[in-house]
Length: 207
Image (cartoon, rainbow, N blue to C red):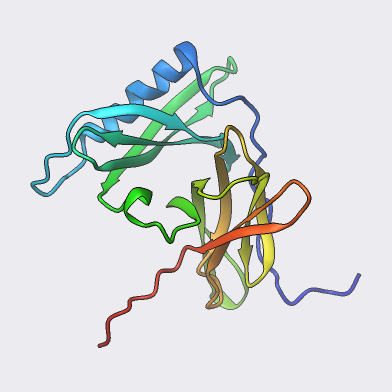
């Protein structure tokens, strides 16, 4: 095989290892997530009470497992974030860390969306000639039917993929590398592309 000119980290995270959280495990994660929600600086907004939390597939990168989440509030905002943890000496989850934020931009108000996405930079990867990529945790829900697999692609190069679990996916992929930005694509079980969304949102306004 010839050398590649796209030398970039690919498929660095473990695929999902567990079912979506439920029972006491979901209660544990909920406690950490709501603690992070309580620390949000809402800048004067009344967020309201969090509703049911939707959990997304787990992904493990760099020895830390990430379980993303979203939840609607009673005032119509969407909470998003993740709970992460490492594996302790006894194999049990340890060193929990949670992050949360909110948005008023929801899929209900954006009928042109085909995939509802959230993302958080969780690390940095150093590439060639001093260039670096943002290692980004991405979680989402397709807004079109018949999806089977989601991929993250950088300049049309697949750098991660995840099968949908209960209609949700989680990706860990390099972004903003060598002037390229991630596209998230949705495919059917037969490999037909059904939808795509970019993590890069252009500003429609003029300078």
